[in-house]
Length: 242
Length: 190
Image (cartoon, rainbow over all chains, first blue to last red; front, side, top):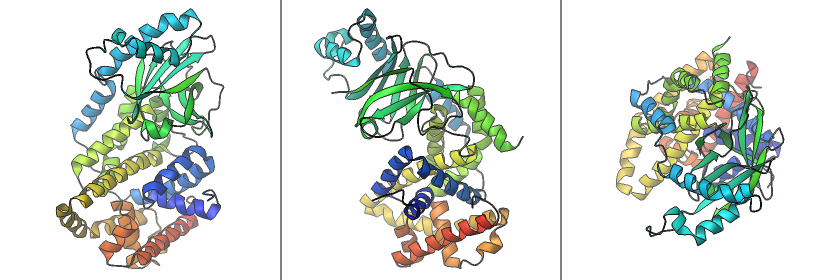
């Protein structure tokens, strides 16, 4: 079925924005939106029409704790208590090997972790590393630039910059997923340095199941989010850690 | 500079992880956005959770925001509406699996059935398309209002209005056709 056929696209778009498109049809249409700029344009026109209806909704001031909770979630250092120590250890393991030159790639890290679990102090735990999607992006100089990890059924992805990025004013660093077949889609924005947790629109399993590689661009903040507009500054395999 | 230009400039700074800009965007829009979520969820606590979740997405730039495609408010309203609708649907499925709560849920909806129509009327007057939309009959207007403001699906609209499913679908469809026509006549996204 060609969802981009004009009349069908118009009908699906307005039902999607209104909310009467449900279940699997809604998810299928969301995947189409990630791939087809034409569909996005039709959807935005309907969003603008419905803005008119939103204007009559009486405003309701949120309680102060909503903003306080938001700050806590986004900016408190303990946002993901387990993640930093995990990444610190993975990075410590990876650094000598990858910088040493030969085994650039997260597969090496996976093997190392599976063979030597005690290096991560996992022996005392009853379970192995959580099932996750993991990516290690290498920059043009062959250096590891970014680690990305998302629990298989999680709805966020944690990124850690292994090299600071140079992001000029007015530009942003964007992380892209490259499916084995089909167009790249935007995962989210990454900071120039440090770590961040990016909310996903769906579970990692659904988003990354067919993704073979991840890549990073630095592009104008005004560039469209439907496709990369500049060459990749780093890229690497996206693998399943289970 | 219009409020929308102002918000666009702030959003560009948020994309570069400017916390001060993020706080200004939040405080400029949170009351309107909570209003939208609250009408759909009819539960303040869940609506505030949706609002907070939406702003987590805003900070991380999930799915990207392109100012050349949509105004910040259009984008924000739809982030919130989509999350509210997803939350509503997941809650609905829980209710369906626990039959004892189902009657209570419908009762709340029936009591507040008039409110969506009032919001629709107010919105149409603000946009100066109320006269144009008057050619819709009361049922068509109510069906459109229940879908937009309450996030109801066709089967729920049919149940609430005591109409066959096909009829409810036709009412919503007619309401949407008319909305597009009336806005087009005023030069809004023709």
